[in-house]
Image: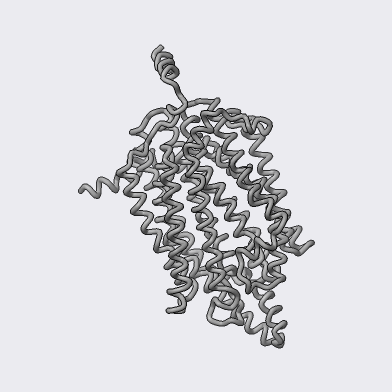
Length: 513
């Protein structure tokens, strides 16, 4: 009976609550889905280009790292924004927004500058020494250009997150539609006129400029409380910097956690380099070939994740900022169940989609042409090369399908503990959650090392099986965050940290009038 009551508490208790969360979440989910489609479109447009997916995969490892760090470090700013915005403290809200944007831009520049100067070294760092010079050179050129989008993306992603957290999910959705439409149009033109992988980066740059422009105009017209003036970007109060620096260790932890996630790609590349996936080295299948497209597909269905940050800010952070601790905890409990159900639905959709993949032979066009080109260079006659490549296409699509299965299966679990983590962070406990993410990230790096250097050599596991085994570690995170959520006093009002006793008395007196 106790367990039943506990489970019931983790879900909205009436139809109106389900409706409220759904109305708030759907625009954010669709916006995130469209944003993910941008990445998928880039991968899709790269398909006709020989080895196009591989070239994108190595460069986009860095893009994923930068995006992951920005998304992770924005948790601190999101926590403060939710509470100050909920408390209607306009001055401190703007200080927090400027700090969020400034931090995002500085992080981006740390990676963008090296990408401009020596992209070749950065590609070699994330790829194995077995990748061909042609793929490495084209990937490096793409990286140099795509680094520009990290800067525009830092502003675009942060401003879009702020719009969602302020309740403007529909506007964020429209912004994503603009970006996707322009990206599709320009990609269609550039791929068939220029025909080089770097042309996809140009499309992304231009589409992001339009998206960022829309975000700036929208907030200026509709909600001046969240306007970020570039000329005042450094005008931030000492009190806000003090709150941020108080949680500065969380930035370091979050960066470590994000790097640990990206390092996985390097490990997979080292073990499953071209020719090591699919049981036949002539297929030239690699982890990069598989993960490049499977990651792009997964991110479309992973859009539930983006609703976590917005919903936590709106329903937990704002209530904490008002001092409604009990209501904030109630909302936090109900959100995790709501997000869990959404994740089950999206996971099932992804699983069903995976069975369609073997029939989507166009996904392997670039792989097929690149394999034929390689086999001809190895001295194979064209007919034999084409036959081997056709068999490789079948294996490629099969590997792609099976690699998506663990992603679909673990999705609800990931959403469950991430929701709990974000709710705990909403109470200002980012040092704790970030520390856990960093520690578990480092342990997972050790775990993948054991898989790569101990388990696989002893068992010769196929890539999809090794990939699934790796994610079993995440069951441990569920227990950690369940204990922390239920036993730790995480719900706190952070707006009190910037108030003096005199200001609190004045507020109470004014409310009583």
